[in-house]
Length: 389
View (cartoon, rainbow, N blue to C red):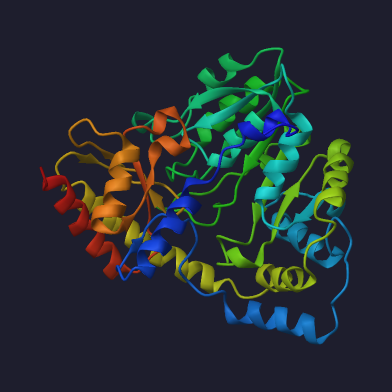
């Protein structure tokens, strides 16, 4: 294809959406497909949030807004972090059409040929896609099962070179549900004192979905590195607002203007309806979140217990998000083949672990953002598949 930017051929795609597309095709052919592939809560957006969006329309909020977001919404974000003892200025908050935009803008800012970016492996697909697009080199940071899908701070620090421009974190993590332990963060923060010009993208989109009496630790809570942290968060997972397309980034003041310029040139501003709904989400009742997380934890406990009863499957208990990442083997088949077989033969949609990096090979991702009766059926389908010759 003459004329295309060569970087276009480096961009990957999101396997979960490809699986969703194929699932829909199979459903349209009359098959009953259980989708444990897509990463979105199976709950409706809370009614108080929906009503806030409707009110915004009725109140006439139909035009453009500020490129960085409505001030009241950015103030709401700051209040949220203030309640955690973290001071954030509204001038640091960039509201975006979904949190994924923060990945895009941040990697456009730091990714370039000859640069190195440290990326979790396995990790969210968009990290690798965008690093590859910029021409930067990916340095893989292992997140392995034997380490509860967390990282080793000393290993991470050993990966830093004069070419390192950015480190990407994701806790709780996609696809593994792994949660970084506080002692690793402390060791990391201590080591980063030697790298004051190195930036960190901390993807905390699953921060409220956390289990086993654990506490989420935001990298913004460490004053030693606060001016190096770019925090990614949003409303999609916590408030079941995936279709509202609303996220945000908190940038250090010295680089905020660059992120804002990218936003102006890309999306101009975010839908007013979504932004006013986002204000209500942060300031309104949080009972929905509490109840949703409890339901997710019950489902997670069921899946982990039942999966570990199946021969040729090993599944650790994830600390957060709404995924399990079991190790699964069958006759030496790849994770991609196993995932494809489950969809085409058993009509069970999953995502192959290899989609998330080389260290994801041998695993599949199951989202338990689905009803319990479907999770029960899924266990039976997996058993049937593994017992087949």
